[in-house]
Amino acid sequence: MTPLMVLVLGPTASGKTSLGIALAQKLDCRVLSIDSRQLYAGMDIGTAKPSREEQQQAPHELLNLSTPDQPINLQQFCGHAQPLIEQEQQRGRPALLVGGSGLYLQALSQGLQPPALPPQPGLRQQLQQLGQSYCHQLLRQADPQAAAKIQPNDPIRTQRALEVLYGTGQTISSQQGRCPPACRVLELGLNPSDLKERIEQRTAALYARGLVAETETLSRRYGADLPLLQTIGYGEALAVLAGRLSKSEAQALTCRRTWLFAKRQRTWFRNRHQPLWLNPESALEEALEAIAAARS
Image (cartoon, rainbow, N blue to C red; front, top):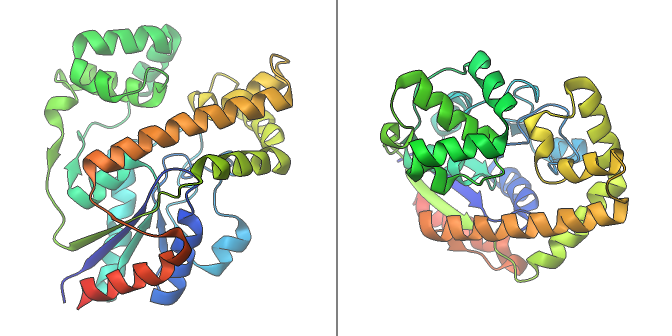
């Protein structure tokens, strides 16, 4: 039987976690979490990481791989994920990948191969001192193809692209090859029509659960200038702690940033994937039918 990889993808707050858990229970497999922020320990509330109760319902992997001050690049993440994918398939189970981090999903399901350059801590520190605005300007000049794909407010990927450029003498765009996996890939997508309302409800829940307190703990431990604390939710919570925003203002801004991010995710999945889009009301039944057909 040809090994099977199942992707549950879609924009943030679309219901991927619940569907992933339900599928893992039905298929007797693990959830492989494909999320670029949930892989960091301590970043639980702000990333909507599966709760302890949810993780008890189905085993989850690829969470808490590192600390926020030790960033993991795409190649390192794939190094963690590939053995788990192979383990599931060798046991006759589908590898169930659940998440919304498009580049990570693309690397694992389409064989996108990132440059094999290890992190350069000294260079990263210098780039952080230069500031994100200046770094992205440097990237636009040196590798416009990469700069066009990286958001101006994304310091992690900006720094990685510059790190590869300075570390190898070649642009990251020229080094990204492909080697498709030797398995069947089934893509299942969630894109509910009420996504904006879902985002508002989840954002309110994150603040109610203690997003600001979690951010304060992280900033004390790693410093408020930590790049991951500039991401959605944490950046606004930092502004609350600094007195620049009220909690209600921060919550509203988090909603807007999340909605814009979700729209970018939709565009990414539309252009780079061809999922079977599931009806949210019958997603589990449709997904199980598609998986059964793919395994037959």
